[in-house]
Length: 271
Image 1 (cartoon, one colour):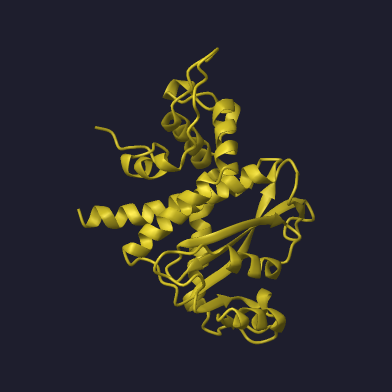
Image 2 (tube, rainbow, N blue to C red):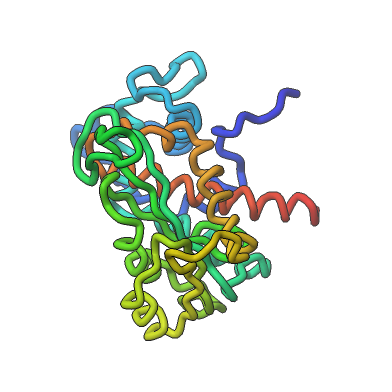
């Protein structure tokens, strides 16, 4: 029996996502073609996320539906909040399994290439001014992504500090914000330190002009590991989507899949 491919939805993930999907009633009069199965469509969406293949080249011989159907369903599910709801559900389950640690969090940004332009893009300072973008992520103490945002490549990391903090979902059994927040010198602004303290968060941010070796990397490395996991999904390494909401859909789904992997690994160990 061959090993299950990573983009094939297993029963555990499917049980969690099924209640989140919108129910589409079939018309009684002129019903048209029967709606394609959501699970097959989700397999196709995940295949694109994992491999980075263009929608139109989605291989039909693997049993997936057409790329245009997967594109529309991914767009619709993102607009109705399915991916965000899945991410929050998995965070709640991780909390129930005592796998979330809000004693500290870490935040950072990572550049990515943009091939076709569009909203939330800009000249990248690390790519000779070519059009680029940025992923911004906040993670808890173990590196589990709590929230992510997308901006143009010319946006400063610190502009997404407070939006990320406010985007951390309320997880049952946890206060909505971490006790401390670790960040590098790019976030060294006293006004943001005051904003964090006003929310009850202790800022641990390296000071500009000081020598390296502050020791913050002992706790900050987890956000770099989270970026490595996110960019392991080839569709998140390079932005091909002109529409920013479609790339944000992949970004949120990627965060949810990372959470599911962590939860499933613990469940396998205890089974």
